[in-house]
Image 1 (cartoon, rainbow, N blue to C red):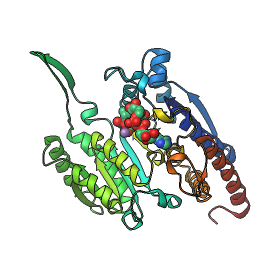
Image 2 (image 1 turned 60 degrees about the horizontal axis):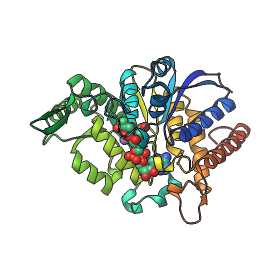
Image 3 (image 1 turned 45 degrees about the vertical axis):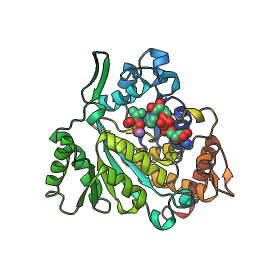
Image 4 (image 1 turned 135 degrees about the vertical axis):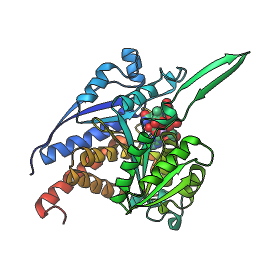
Length: 372
Ligand code: NAD
Ligand code: IPM
Ligand code: MN
């Protein structure tokens, strides 16, 4: 069926539950390749704490070089208590930041969409939750994450600083992406800032506003980040696309994840001047490591974003997502999203059940026609 697609995918499992959730994403991608006759060549490289231990640096040149040559990159998670005493700049997290920067990835999209079978696990009441389906477009290559920083000690008093700084072109390129994304969704864009206090936010707001003359079909709204956090928690369905700086986007996306019940459910995709990077938004969850209780769904949905957004394989992505919905509707649950009467399973069994469901769906669809 269809023409065969040949792609090189770099896997960066990282630390903690990173390798567990990466295995789930790879299993789904392998299954897609097998059923649809694609050739996906996987290459695995160290990053984060694993790379510090193996090579003395959180982002070895070999890893970055492989990512530069890849068609798409998948990352599990980095970081953990073993490396927590290291200073900023030498930590596992620096490996991820250097990777994003090194690949010129300035866009990070984090879709937060209610999965219907999981409506019951949201901490919000049904009427508040509505049809939650939003996207956080997070600037990924600038702001406080990459601004000037330092520390001094004067007269025995230690001081440390990080600076938030954005240029007009940096704001314009991320806003262009967000406006375009909004044009293709419900045409509502909410730009989040702190323009009542920060000069960098004032430039942000002015720049995003000026661009609305070009994107006339999009209804633009501005919101201060403190109010946005509140509105997100109170009535998330009011949002479609939310645009924010690197720092605010990091915080808002974890908060938004809580609304659908678990941070383990949320995927992300990062775009820029090179191969796109796909990663769940959660971290290495040290306390879950090795217990097979990590939820692989954020990772699996990151893989479907890879299929759809990096390779243009929408049918394959739809097939995975529909199979996933059926597995959830069948009651299978990892511990973080469990409910009374659920079929409690670990992450690896969940992935295996999904793979079987994908095979079943494929056979059915092949026999009776896709889209029926
Ligand atoms: P975390 O996301 O690892 O964990 C936060 C909470 O969510 C914990 O209770 C954890 O058990 C739970 N959780 C996370 N992923 C889950 C999953 N897939 N299924 C079920 N539950 C899940 O964040 P943290 O505890 O603040 O940070 C731990 C480490 O991860 C730190 O070193 C941090 O720097 C790093 N981190 C890495 C990334 C990344 O690699 N992208 C993202 C965030 C944090
Ligand atoms: C995320 C993470 C990272 C970030 C850390 C681990 C560098 O929290 O991807 O959300 O802050 O971007
Ligand atoms: Mn984060």
